[in-house]
Length: 142
Image (cartoon, rainbow, N blue to C red; front, side, top):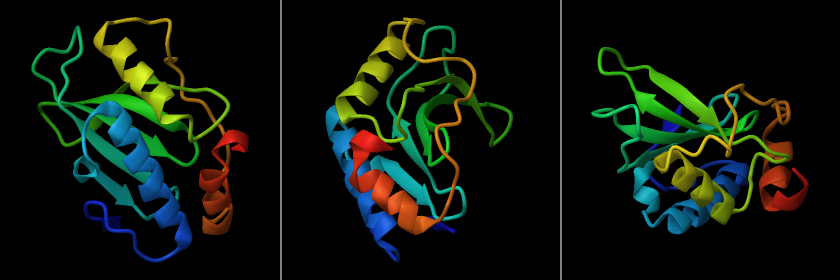
């Protein structure tokens, strides 16, 4: 089930996720209206960006977030609805500081391959909404 726009519903984990997404989109200079959240397991989010990446002209770009791998950058495939992940942020947490996510986007825009990684990280396992809520509320220890 996908929640539309930035309307927290249901479990407090979704409220915490929307608060985090609002902080991230503010750091990116965009609004939370560019976000959607998928409530299925693993919980995930999509953030549309007004960016083009070097090497991918004509492809729309999005940030993807999920509770297992954290942040990734993806391009939209012109011939299908699938997204192609081009880089993962990685790191020790699924919810890094919003400024760190913004630096990731800047590095992508500048084609700086020193930031992020190609292989998907496994930062945690999906253990339920209560644990996700705790991870998002205590961002420094997730």
